[in-house]
Image (cartoon, rainbow, N blue to C red; front, side, top):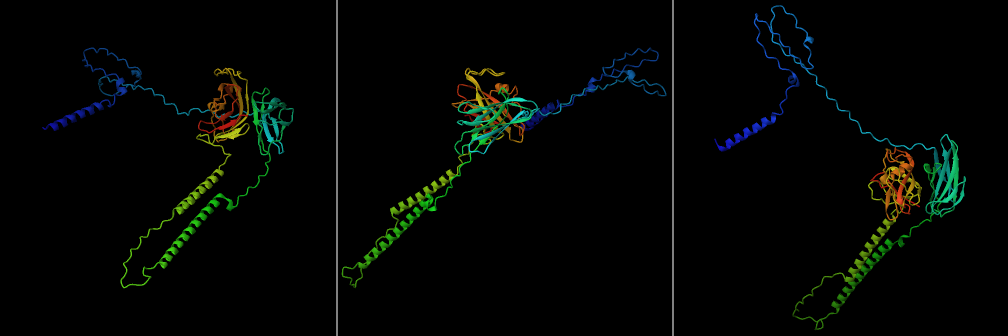
Length: 492
């Protein structure tokens, strides 16, 4: 037998053995009933008729098997009794059924938060007048008498000329002024207040947010804002310059004039050259006075005529004209594009969703999911920021700044917002996030960031920032999500 055949056979036997060994663990195991059943007793020889029969030892049935007395006796048969060997009784043990898997349940979701109805509401409107005037309506919608404090933030640099309802004008943070009323509102009543400011420059808008607080002035009930806009003077009608005074038209006319001048000069020089050549040929004569001879003259070699090329001055002039046309067209196009830029449009902050919006105090600013309005910002004295409940230690010279913010969900679904994304920017570019523990304390123990805001709801709440130093925040940055452009509010 060749060696290759022997090797092939040996390899086939080895592979066959490996297949058998791999298939052995996959064979079905013995049935649990057969494993649990006792083995039948060995058959004993039948005794003879004369010998006494020894008492047979009754085997003890296994646990869970029915007793022999529970088995019905076999029916009586007619004829000689036939002795049969004892048969083992196999008992089927009921196996416990494994518990079924629990039904699939969706993870619990946080219920969207909705602002509780406030007992006091505020509405602010402006009046059509040459000077700024505001009308404030404070309404008590509850069934009990309430004491409230109403504060109106006036624009920086403005002065009041009239205050109704016993209000007082006091300086606030920075150059702003604040008007304060202390009211006692009967149940289901409406109180109207008013303020008038000194006249300002035409076309300058003035925003005056107003908030109603509890009697101690710590928690806001409701806030509203209004912007007074003076009637702007009619803008002078801007007439376009005549066509012949526009820069592109003038440049194009100059280019055409230069081209025409170059063409006329070239034609004149060419005609002049032809006349000179004809005159030279007409006046030229032979050495013998023009008389003919009997011998032909040898043919004089004709001069090599050089190919005419345009003069240098013409090439330079054409290049200058083309360059002037290109520069003029580019300048005209750039001027039109720059004039078309909207200078009032705010640039994006580089976020993925929406465009960054910047405004001032009391102006509603909308981003991708929320509309934010900052009505008020107050800061305590340096060193007054103590340790809040559940919060860390405050800086040595730290103080807490509380911003009264209105948040409205402008989407059709509930939205989450996070305390880490609400920031107060200090001078020098430094910023701090919301102090969660202090904000929870200012909201009477309620975590305003725990639950999402329901669609279309609005909340007015205080946000607290713990800052260090004597300078108050310059800006507030508010946003709904990490990839939202958010809004920035300049502090007065």
